[in-house]
Length: 391
Image (cartoon, rainbow, N blue to C red; front, side, top):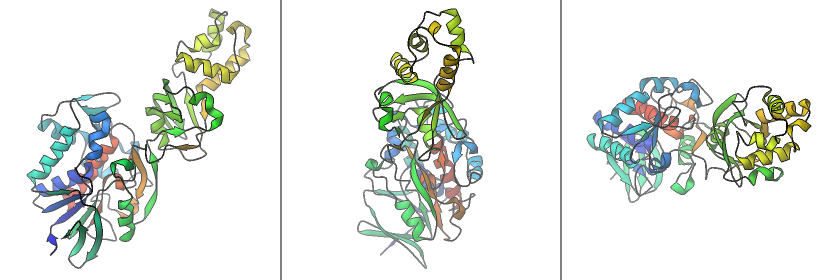
């Protein structure tokens, strides 16, 4: 005999738990299912264990989607301030780290506990530890088989995320379900992910562990944050940000000394002609990086022995140093997934599928990807709120 609910939420992550709590407190009988042993596993590792739970500067243009307008409705109806009010109501201490990023002072466990308490207030049943065996749609709604049990409800919410971080149990279940019920899927790809460099860039891969602030660009996207050289290529916040915009074959450029005024190298030559270029660069860059750049530029010796033309060329190169990555570190190291369930088949107001009444998709499962820094959590809350209000 199948258990009967008003709604079944697949996925006990940020979006799923939040949605379930909203619907439960509206009087709906809700069941949350997750194959993981405990709820909120990705929340617990986020933000270095302190959960970067939102960003004050959330705005639609800071999200990638095939339809850039899709996020506007949900984000306007559930804001970072709304979620912060909830955090503060639970007495969770928080701080702003940088660039609008809000973190728990204590632990990400506090956010998971808060979400579970919100579910408890709505008498939501949360069941973890059994894989979803099948999902079918009949006259009475959607029937989900899990373990030795099954449940039926007129509404089903897909909140199982994307395939990023598979070691946490992430999978492409959301896309399989979407296709099963007639929804299209935008090709998923790793986002907020380190990029790899080819063997021809071994000089830079040998700088593993060296970090410096840059302006990284890919296409029209530009981010000023730290870049980190790794044994495989490039990482750090600036690189993770542009990776969401990067496609194979694209060039990523970095302004390695973003605060320098045009003509600064010639000015340095006039002021101290006996200084080596390497030494001058090391005043604004890590020494190992300065040495590698000079080696790649082929410029050694004193500034006074270098022509103004050579210095202008070096300055231009440093302001727009090109890297052509040969790939990324894939879903294993990606913080999120770009692409996903096509928003063209969903209502931007309720997250309900247009061609499958009662079917909803929220959070990372959808073709919406935020910037690094709490934006993806805010999308989880906003999309979860939209669906939770509509169930």
